[in-house]
Image 1 (cartoon, rainbow, N blue to C red):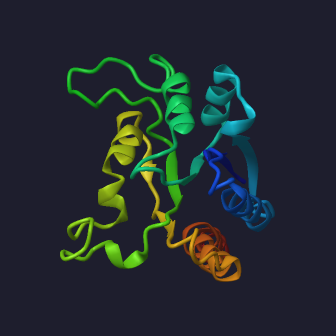
Image 2: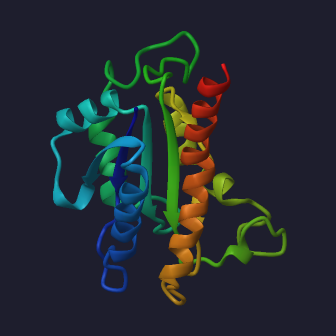
Image 3: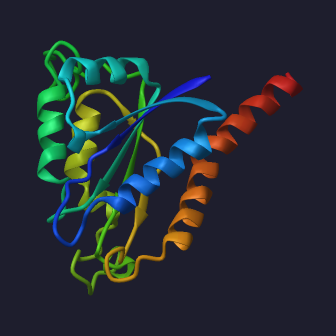
Length: 195
């Protein structure tokens, strides 16, 4: 059984209390727990960096669940990374810059909630100048590459403050989880049965 560590990086603001991000984490846990061992952290509830490092070491896959504030992670989530991603645990020195990651056997998935609508991505005439979600979050992906982790497809929800269609959001999440995690499990099971 694979092991998944889900981190909820929401930070409460007056117009964004974090309920959607917690709903997503709860739903992921419910959907995946029959096939995977799950551990979670809610950054806003506090944490001990050494215990978080242990969760990273334990996990095969890390899911980063986060709202997007000012085109990045909330400040508390970035501070979490600053405190937890320690030299000698996550990375070491290397002759090649960025080549010292110690978590090369791990994958990660970025899961985001945006107030931005989906139309502003991958459209040259819109705000992000034709960049898609992963290109806008380039800095985050480089952090994970620096420590050696490999990306799984990103999950992204849009227009979540003005149009919070929770049922639709969870349906999209189910589709994504099936494609990324559950179909992989079925494929692996089929290979065992056939082989």
